[in-house]
Image (cartoon, rainbow, N blue to C red; front, side, top):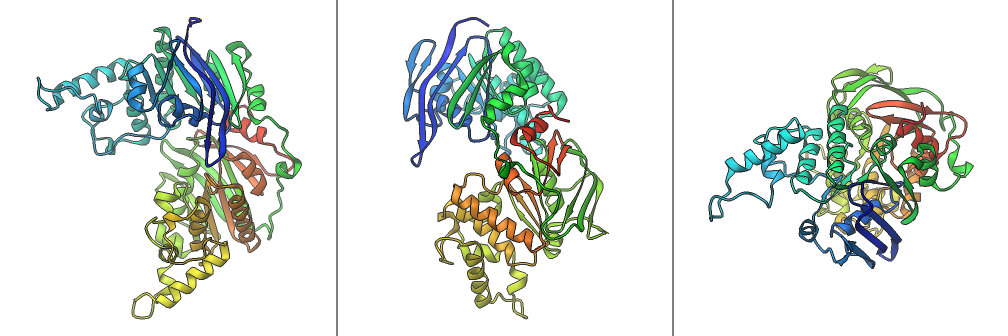
Length: 502
């Protein structure tokens, strides 16, 4: 690593809807260094990166590239400077081949024509695959690849540009241990060649291994810049949290609200390459929280519990009887599911509140001849609106026009119209304002008081502590810690998720 500065972000500010998310943030990247960027969810990491790459405009501040003031307004501006970004959200196109994705927009042409030279394109990508030792085939359709291999395609896209600065946002989230080791070797080789890397990760062991320096953000502001020898995992957690958690938020009790009868039991559940030998119990009236970092396997686990995805081994018992979940069967048995991606999986934006509420409840509002009772449909919708306080109270309002909090209430409300035994909620308050969060917490607590089992998956540590009766922490597809009595803090959960607490 040389002392030459390649990128400077100075006094960067950004607000959304009047709410500041970056406040006077500075970031300096030197030539040939791996510079880690860390912070809790909502600290401003992704927003800062999107400003550097031209996806967002900054409200104030200055970007400097190799000493010169620059304006980056698009991905093409970014690429022209020599900056490449591998985003956490995959941007691969499933219908295209590996080589078509890697060289999208940079395809070789036949002579002076506009025709793509597919033979040359495949050859170019094969050369990249061999150079970086990725287990990929240039002609394979991305739709046929697993999530880990798709992540490798995304990484290969970034590596194909020969950039001076490579930004990696949670690059190992979907990778296996072997694939991660390949990536680490590539990062070290690129650093030796003078390429600068911004490495965003929640995984402290990766940062400790790779980073030459570390910048920590908290609540949209700079906290500290640490040199390699100053990176202490325990201290990093303290700096990320930045406060002592109130006892009201940090106390997790063993006793459930309505008794202690085990109604759901999972024994040694495994899904190859995703999670392994997961076992736990859920009691009636209990809110069981699942904590962990991105890629820990929490979402995949609850999707299996609901019957959306299958599993390779293990057993599930519902009320003492062996249970093999399928979506239709889960609905009939009283399971509700609020997915992480509510906009694409939880509701249909163009349909009204009325129609969205009815989607999972047609069996309850059908007449004897099979037709839908419009009277019962409207009655159910009005009941859901009142139960979760959807605003505006207009059954005909398209759900896509509602605020994020009210959209989530629609998704919750449709399940409350059924006799629920279990409600699974995955990141239920992501992107929702504080007032709506409190409303959703109230709904979850009321369900638990009625004896409903609630499984809560959340990356919001304060949310886990505030709502859960017990907390299980997953790491790399396994449950590594249970917090069931005494006092637990955000730092405890983060330490367990990062591998610092057994």
